[in-house]
Every structure is written in C-alpha cells, then in structure tokens.
Length: 330
Image 1 (cartoon, rainbow, N blue to C red):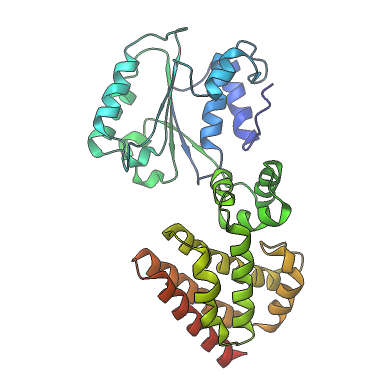
Image 2 (cartoon, rainbow, N blue to C red; image 1 turned 180 degrees about the vertical axis):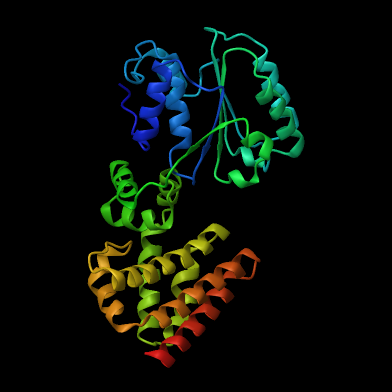
C-alpha cells in the first residue's frame, strides 16, 4: 500500500473500487480549494493504474510508482498553465499524445491543473476530445473554480468534489513536515495549502514578523500612539516584497480572528496560541462591533495594497484608524 500521506481517504476508497471493478469513466473533474489534495490524488490514481504491485492501492515503492511520483513516467502526461493561461498550442500537443499508444502499455493518463485558466480556443479544442475519446485514456481535470468552465465541458466529465481539510489535519501535516507547533498554528490560519504554508515558512523573517505584528497589535490595544512609529521602526525593515506586505495584514487578521473565535468558544486554539491567555483577555474586553471595525480596517488596507498603494502609508493609515476605534469604543 502506498505510504503517501492521505488527504482524502474517502475519495481514494472510491477510486480503488472503480479500478478493481474496471468502471472508471474516461474523464473526471476534481474541484476544490487549493491544498485539498487534488494533484496528490491524481498522482495516486496514476500510481494505482500503473503500479506493478497494486493491491488495495499502489505500493508506492516499485520503479513505476517512483517514476510517477517524480513526474518521469512517459504515459502519465501533466499539463498546467504556461504563464497565466493554458493555450491552444498546449492542447494541440496534448492531443497529439492522445493519438499515440502508451509507451509501456495501452493506458495513458492525462492530468490538467487549473483547467479554468484555459483560453476559449484551448477549452473548445479539449472539448472535442472529451466528446469523442479515442483509446485507453483517462483524463483528470483539476480546478478551484468550476464555475469558470464551459458548461459543455462540465457536462462531459464526472465531478469529484474535494472538501477542505480540517484545521486539525492541516496542523498535523505541517508538524509532520517539521514545523514547530507555534509556527504551524499561525500558518494553518494563513492558508489551507500545505505547500504554500511550507513556502511561507521558508521566509527567514517569518518568526520575527509574527512577533512584531503581535507587538503592533498590543500597542494598538493599549491605545499607544507609538503604534504609528512602530510601522517605520519595526515592521517596514522586515518586509521587502508585495507578498510580504499582504502577510503583515494577514497576520494581524489572524490575531483578530483568534479574539473573535475565543468569544465564541473558550476551547478555541488559535494561530497565536502562544499568547492565548492575552487573547482570552482581549476577547472578554472587546465587543463584537469593535472587532468588526478593526477587521474592516485591515481588509480595506489589503485592498489598497492590491491597488499598489505604498505599503508604509497603508500600515500607518491602518494604525491611526485602529487607534481611533480603540479610543472611541473601549
């Protein structure tokens, strides 16, 4: 049995039954948010179809399984956007592959990521194949936005919905990947995608930034006007890129969400669980209206950042507005 981490066991059990009974459809659409295991499941299905030792799932250890895991099997074809879209030429090249028999057998498996990013020409070209499949080919389309797909494509595939993983499972995956409990807690709040969380964790300034955003919140909570100066002296030296600017406000939002969730449930384990006692105090002190106002300021700041307004100005403006909210309501 494969030793790969299982994200969607019920979906895997379904495909084991379909493979064993030889009842696979020719095309499936995997729909779900980033991080729900769509690509991992597609690779697992490829291993199941080609594994030399298949029994209730792929072994994950044979030469074939290892080649599929490393994206080196000639009969497992992977396609994803070239830049911002999947273009007609990519689909034409793919269809040429369809006309060839499998290199190592009769079967072929094609997986297409972010299929909603196909150009109209590319989507129509793919549709022709889905209407008239030729040969022993399985197609797995993957999307996080099925509403953007052509209705004619949706009508020719079997939809498999991937539910979002629970926060507990995301936490476990991050800790198993080697992250500390404290870092995993924050990152599991920032994103549901384990790979993206690991990428964020690679930021050498992340730990310092997490602590600095907390200190920034504490200054605002205390109605300390130094929160405005803190942006220049402590926050800005830590951030250099646009994605990091958003990260600052996302981390602040995690704190506010922790406080709100603590008001709802005393057992809530938040992203900033290192400061859970202080967060519980804030949950008792702040009312829902104040929290809503603070969240609105942060979300507005995120919109300004997307519009390329200077980050320092956005942070300073947000600090002033949040200080005003705190002084008026608490």
